[in-house]
Image (cartoon, rainbow, N blue to C red):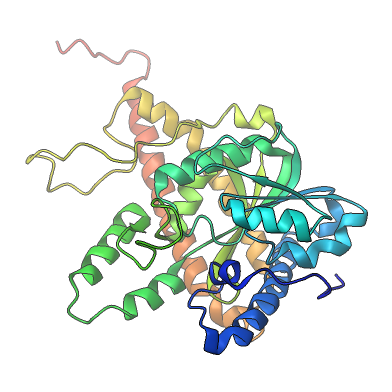
Length: 364
């Protein structure tokens, strides 16, 4: 895709929200990084689409969710001649600047939580770099539901997350004796998602809900498949640091088979009797829960199989081969997912046995 640098740069204050740590002494370097990283992020999106046999040429209504002041969108101007480009963000100043200086796209401001002003099924491609890296689970689930609503049936999404690499880098920055080392890792391994509220964004220009979030691959395969099929999971494919997911919105008839209500963000404290038992992401055993598991299992397995084909053709980051970078996380995601599917199958077997004809449940 042809690139252009003819558009003006945003003010340094807005660049600082994208390239953090802006200083007067290094102003030119940060401005250069703003431009180069935007062009690279667009190339990362293109590579992610290629991983599932797709291109920008297949789409005509494209939304960048969390677009800021147009770091990436400015490089998409050549697409504007044949498709409709839209960008939305919570930052009113950034959107105001983009509206005035990047008129080839349609710009909008969204609140911290949905809904947006967009219509049902309005976009056939939704792009995002680094929003789900900063939201807790409640906010994420709300936005996943909204993105599902505004995505067209069979529409694609490319979203980024902080995966294993980002977590390892952040963990290494902690003091060796920091209590957070153990707490962070235990939480991520147990829940699959870690939201760090005590971070550098405290007291910043960003909203109070905006902090740092990490995801385990198995969580994304297990939890996000309530809203989308996962076509590919691409470690470190976004600026060499964040992971990308290529998602597909299901058709309405397929969505009817999947429960869309997210699990509670917080659960009551466990009793002494249950404290020794490992936590269960599917809650207490029961007929309704097991029937929900039956509906979930199919789409999750489908997402796992689809993702496998995406990995095979996934683009390698320029500084390291795919075979060196991807297999550890791919193996981890698929192995942990297989373990969960195995547990679901055992639970379903128990359910079938309990509901078998002639089963005496009277207690006599």
